[in-house]
Amino acid sequence: MNSRIQRRRKLSVMICLMLMALCTRLYAGGQSSTNFQIPTDVVSGGGGDSGSANYSTSHTTGQSTAIGESSSANFTNQAGFWYTFYGVGFSCETGPAIGSINVEGCLSELCKSDLSASASDECGGNLTYTWTPLNGGAIIGSGAVVQFDPPDAGPHPCPYQVQLTVTSDVSGLSSNQTVDIRIKMAGDVNGDGVVNLMDKLLVRQHFGQSAGDPNWDVRADATCDGVVNLMDKLKVRQQFGQTGGCACQ
Image 1 (spheres, rainbow, N blue to C red):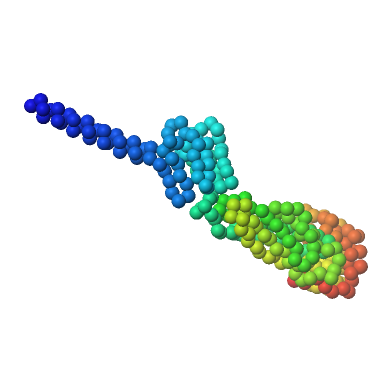
Image 2 (image 1 turned 180 degrees about the horizontal axis):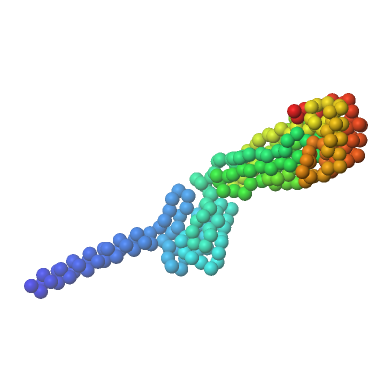
């Protein structure tokens, strides 16, 4: 009887030891893939240095730490969990997607055209916006919102073209899109491609008005100074009879 009890006890102890060994293996075993490896000596409460050819970290993945963010050229580790990881095998090969480019309508050669764009990046990178005039004019400002400043006198191509290049700092890839900008002669206030009596009448009709007035018509402001005054009359007179630029009608 005693020998049976002893054998059962021994069997129970052996089973417990086997289960403990299995649990220890599951808990402390190495974690790895083709892109990283965390050896067993760092999967513990105390953490420690771990790394591979693709990353290194000063504390255990998943462990809360007061150290805060740690990073290398390939990843950022934010206090206890991976939130951005790009390394060998995780390279992002998708360029930014340009959503839209907003441009003002047909403007006087003395005005500046506002340009704005939106873009997204599946790689999660920071985006750089580069605007390049392709056939004249200049860009004022930088980033997603800029201004296009055409030459103050013609002849003007119709239309001017500006290329937007958006580049991701994660993938290093770029996407391009071109936008057309229609510029008219300053004296062609009604935008029909010729400076004539109709332009004189439009300036006379709104003479003395300022931006924000109830009947304000931005077309009559040939000089783009926010008021229809003698300078606008003089510009129409100066270019009277000329043709060129873009017809906006």
